[in-house]
Length: 266
View (cartoon, rainbow, N blue to C red):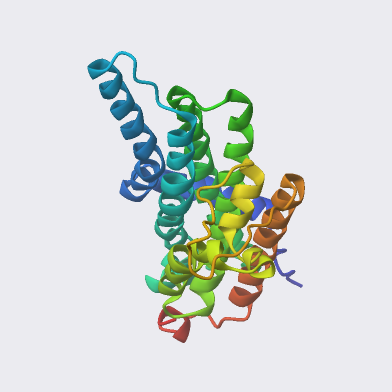
């Protein structure tokens, strides 16, 4: 009597995915992700050096450094990084109809979105830390750098998981994700307190301990900005990411997979 093969454990499946897909990080998409997060800091460092060369008394102030962190990295570079990295996960296999090849060996299907996403999270998180470290050259307080890095890394974890889930649920998940990250999130300045908690920017600012902008009395519909304690903000982003990865696995598990199945069309 023949026995059915047992499924590999989720941990072994994730390890196999990381080993198998790692070379893709060194292709064009991977380096684009690197440039998206590192280039803004590098350009800022070059600009600061140029200004110092022309004006020896010039010093890049703390306020300018915060603008680079909040306005450029947190509100622009990070969302675009997520929009580029997320489709390289399980959604790419579905669109290219290569997912049946992935499933040609018995594996726990529900772990696949996390397994592929973890690879891109690790790659992006490493370069985020490098970029934040570069802010020290702009005059950022060394004591604030760990929290700045933690803010962007945990937000990247949550946003990447969120985008992966949207990509599995909606045909145009990337579009919906872009609308959320680039339009909804920046509206945090005019949101009442409870709605502010539904933006990633709120938690980034709470963890970093600084804001990318202030609410002015002349701003129409301006609301008082609230703050979440940074340990709680990190926990919220981490748990939200876990929830989205779990929901992505559940969605993929319930999706019929075939060479010409409906899942390929979204």
